[in-house]
Length: 322
Image (cartoon, rainbow, N blue to C red; front, top):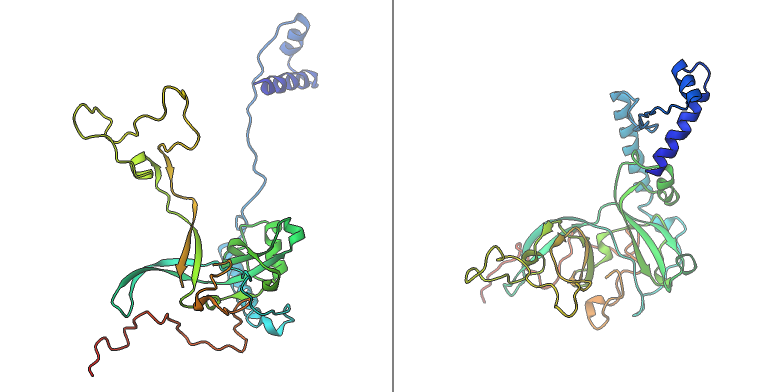
């Protein structure tokens, strides 16, 4: 509290030196009497929301103009091959492509032609664009990097410095931005859109996402502890962890499994079938992928739906007779 005391003494000096001060303050200064001086600190917020001083009609007009501008920017990036693209290279076994940013829609079951059921996660690649290319020298690492953003978001609640990277790429503001390591032969020009056709059915990918937050949980739910016995001398210790150290150590080791916050952290699931990194080349499905990505205005034409050859289609007959 030394700072408050210094502030009080400074304020007292300024107030006593001000012209027109009360007579009792001058008498107190002359006689050496010290009186308490109180301050009221009030926070003044000088910033305002973007729509605080606008009418409802103006707010709706700005939102409409922004939506139309977003559509125009997205449409202008649909044909990147016609706008001086960067050199395209051929795929190699040690090439590392860029990944995509997708939105989770939910889960559903699918069946293979052998009748086996699988639980799959539905992901939607929505408004995904390459934002920036970072060379090895800039990143200070061993590989180059590409910044990728997905799902358009409102630009009204972001500062000009935060919007700079999106304006340089010529794309709308993105809700999620991720960084991917790529090789020099797989770099893509900023502003290029990325589609779900970047991956093909049968490939294996690594998926990184944030887990569901569970809050503060005990050791049985958080770490899968068995717990204490239900009876035989146990008193209110059924779900407790038990001993956390030994009498020789006299301390709790770092990393000990104990109660705490569970979930709401990023986790990566490896080898899910459909990697933003090098694909296993011993599988035929991972050879010759769209490199460096799939271009909608390229020579390759794809059907509306792509399925793995092992997936059963309900439009096909389930029973056939010889």
